[in-house]
Length: 294
Image 1 (cartoon, rainbow, N blue to C red):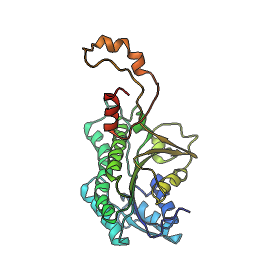
Image 2: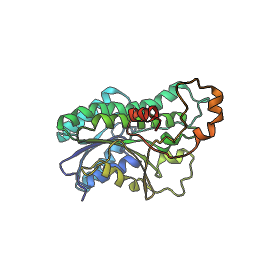
Image 3: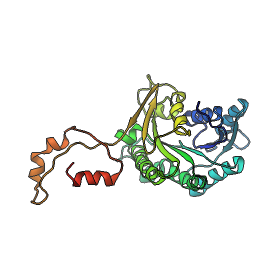
Image 4: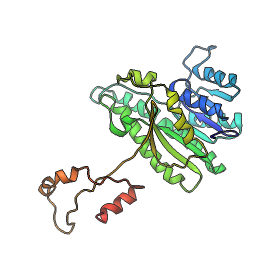
């Protein structure tokens, strides 16, 4: 049975939606949880993070609230410090906080575009950068990064969101390689769930179910039993799968003679053909494959 007794987790953006579901499940399985969510309520009123903490404690779990935004380096450090102060450790980081922005590139102000990156990409970077030394020192850690199908495939009208989520996949892949020699696992999840964000995105939500059907995968990725590293998973409405980048067989032209644009044009159908797709462990492996004509 997957349990988290003796482990401490930090879940960003955990006041509602997916983050709340992750925090509740981790706590139900024994983890002590830092529930992070920026507080928007008036002074003296309970924020969404407080309400999730109350739920966890009412069920017999351990949790504390944190109200920092992920948008600054200092806030990432404060979140990690909150875990260490409350529980003396940090074993699990779930980077869930995120925002979207509905605007095509020709309509979005650069300040708005940059803010999406500030939250989605740099917010993940700041918290992960602060947490990683703790995990390296203890020689153990689980890092889960929330990406999106928009990061895999793009989505019309969500250029900034798609780009930020795609950047997280590359970040996750590189970090996983850097952590591979230690028992620190880094993976990503692209969730499909009925949340306030998906409702705003204008997609058909009629077949979507709640975040609780994504949380089991995140719990496995956060567990000692997780064997995956550097992988992107799809989860939602009972479906679970994996996504990865592939290259086709392509075309090999003699590199010892000039190659013209017309040579490329004459073979463009074969160059684009979806034949013999395969993935590579890293960028070097891809380069070696091309160089060798494989």
